[in-house]
Image 1 (spheres, rainbow over the protein chains, first blue to last red):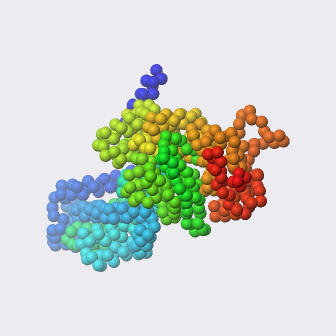
Image 2: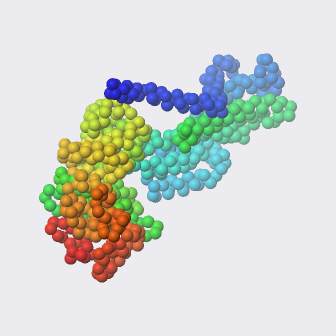
Image 3: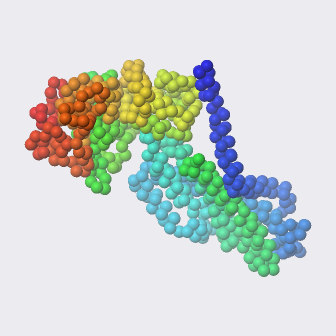
Length: 296
Length: 325
């Protein structure tokens, strides 16, 4: 009797995994702000994916007869100085912004995470070298660094991603290095070394999964920052170039008509605001869920 | 070095260069581990027991650690091997069990993955073969429903089960030497007994030698054949376990044995409390002159303050003390 009871308890590993997922989901549901952030991101994703269906025309085709029109049924958010629908440009702009956000965190992750792991794990001269380089990069305010890099690399979508991405790299290096320093002192890392495991295997299989939580949080927060930085570059005319619809650039060109046609600058601004808000709220929510220090 | 010696440590000196100076954690230790035997290493916290074990597998980060001397395993010096060669030894010919079973398994990998990783690494078998060997090892260490447990994460196992899993991992490649660093310290008494029994049985089955590092003299009496007593980085006494318990030669060993509470043992006349060794272990940065134990020794003679004692051989025992000169 006792035996059957025990085997029954053990034989349901999936159920326990399920319950952990369910617990996290319940926690997420209780965190209204994070849920709101997640919904915002989802909406932007859907808009970006369905852009051609939501706005069948060409968002960049000028129609000077209709320039600077106020919101109407035909153009729900009005038109800009070249008579292009602002709604259409915002819809297509979400593709550009999400692409930049993903590209930037990819640069940050692929460069920053390995360097952070190496720096934290090996220590010594390697660590010293990487950290002094990181210090140098961190000495510049992030946006200024991105700006300086654009000045060197030139404008455009690819260069925006690269320069904003590089400005994020030191943040990932610091974060991952710090976590690696604490994880590498754990007995299981020593035990893995005592079993003859190679350093590369230890880094990838034993340390990386244990530092994933803070990386995930930083990635969500980083996407918000990336959109903001890219929009800032676009606003200055140093980001993605016209006629590609980009929120920052739309904001920049709308600035000239702020008093007579405020909708030209306002709606792209709102689009940026909610995108950044969405990523920040969901980043905070992820922190609440993933950070063991906040666990109940 | 005797013929049947599996591991012989000759004049091992492990030093750490830190900001305050140089700490010599292991200071000229020499010892032999024979094939198939269990050697007990006892001493207080900080006497260099663990550092000796970590030096054998070269697991200490260098710098700050500097290791000198010779560690011959099967006649080959581990200290002069390349990193690749020592990696071949780790987990394969020599493996290690740690004190804390709660933290010595990786929380994000299943038990089976961790054990089969070691098997795959050293035996060059396929993933499936390694997995079934891992399950087999879990069965050998008497974990119930091993095929289910193998798929679970460490947090679902109790402390005793995790230590069994660690033992399964350490023995998965049938090592010839097992370094057990306080393997039962973090477990409660009934589980300790089970782990001791398990290690005894596996030692016979796998024919491995064990270096048992502990401050638990009861465990030594239970498992070890020979005992090495360490104090402040030096071997102060070495003897067969019966001899050591019957007639400890070094005053420090004597003090250690006196400070164990024994039910039914009479206190010395005039004493109501358990005997203790007076004083504290001095900092390794301020090693006392002469014999390192002299500030705490109850049988102090003049020369102890001035000169380091010689290693005295007596009836097959070794003792580091002026009293037996």
